[in-house]
Image (cartoon, rainbow, N blue to C red; front, side, top):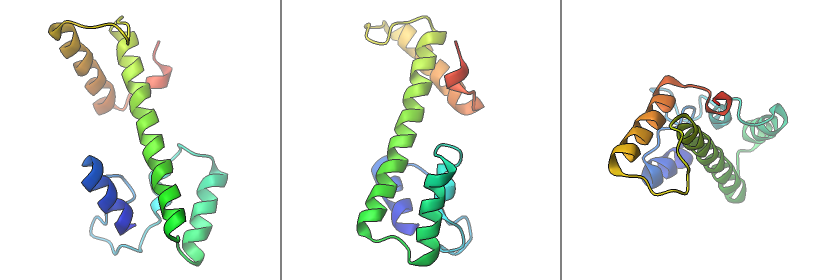
Length: 121
């Protein structure tokens, strides 16, 4: 858990829910909580079982980190596409600064409010 926390903080500046200690010992919670509802219960169960029994070896830790990184990236892309849709802009089109600023504000509004970006149309 500590290794994952350090990786995401150093690489991206991310504080991932379920990875930071938050005053607990590093082994008090399972890092798979970071998956939340983003993966099937079977996948989460596989990681939980492995963590409960022997922990993750280096290869499994890399797979876990890559999976989590991919899920976060996919979520960000979903928000970005929703921001483009809500702003009635084309993703591959060049934007003037004012429209780009508006697009960023829309993205941040989706992010901060926790709006289900995949449900926007």
